[in-house]
Each structure stands twice: as structure tokens, then as C-alpha cells.
Image (tube, rainbow, N blue to C red; front, side):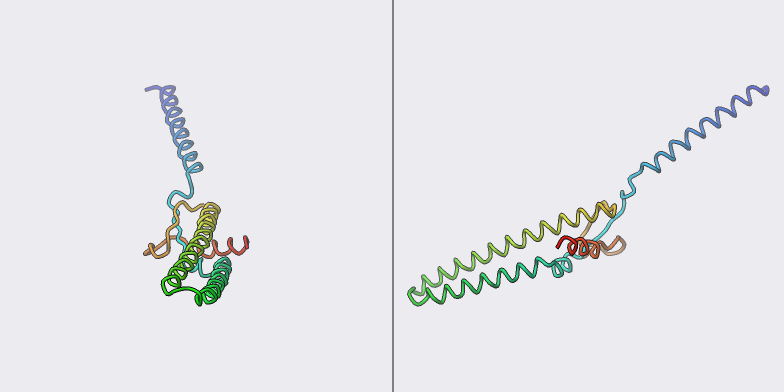
Length: 150
């Protein structure tokens, strides 16, 4: 093998090494940094500390007191069966109101968890009760976002 053939082989090897290095470098630079990043949220704590929870409780308590007053006023003129029916009606209305309030808070919390996860480059968010070990605790970040919104 003469010198020119060796130079050509060396140039080919160096060129292949440079191409391989470029491909690897591009793969590393463009890789999704959040592919395996997992976080968890303590939903119970988020709901307990959410300002909307207090407002919802106050709304429910006011409505319950209003229904209680109406029931007491109407009960004197109603039979036992009619009183039970009216009570059942008011209980159903309170349950519907509670579900409506809970659903609105839940939807807001879910949206804020998604936004916070995107900001922190988190791919997966679990409920804290489902995590045995590892992961990033996103709870404080979500609560901070909630407090900023309120």
C-alpha cells in the first residue's frame, strides 16, 4: 500500500468519524429533555389550600342555610311525606351545586398542573399516592401558580 492510499483511507476514516460525531451531537441536542422526567402532585394538599375551596364552602353553607330556612317556613303547612319530598329536593340541589363547584375547581387544578408541568419540562404527572420513590414534587409549583392566578 502506498502513501496516497493510506492518506485516502485515513481521510475516509476521519470523514466517517466526523459524520458520526455530528449525528450523535445532533441527536443529543435535539433529544426531548423531558422524555423520562416524572413528577407527582399531592392533590389533597392542592385542594385543601386552593382559595376556591373556601369560596365553594361558603357558597354551599349559604345555600344550605337558605334551604333550611325555606324548609322550616314551609314545613308547618306540609304533611310528613311532603316535608320529606321537599327535604330530598333541597338535598339533591345541594349535591348538584357541590358537584358543579367541585368540577370547576378540579378543571382549574388540572389545567394548572398541565401548564406547570410544561413549564418544568415534565412529561408525566402522577398523584403523589401512586409514587413509591423518585420523581419531582410539583405540588409547591402548582400551589404557587394557583396563588398567582387568584
